[in-house]
Image (cartoon, rainbow, N blue to C red; front, side, top):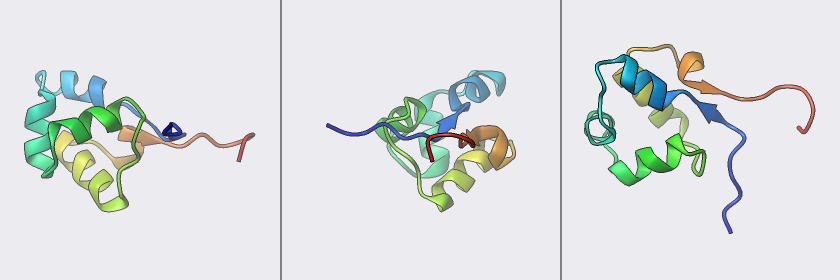
Length: 75
């Protein structure tokens, strides 16, 4: 069983705010499969730092607007 990541994201909301960009369109811009975008959106997979930057760039948003990591307890 895969342990979900603690990294959260706003990819889905940003896709819709950017003219309803599809998962397939984002995947093509980033250079990954649609299944990878789905897994990242659902928190089942954490992207590499380079991929995270490419996603943020494709969405036209700062990295910390796209991805969040909880601080505080549970570290």
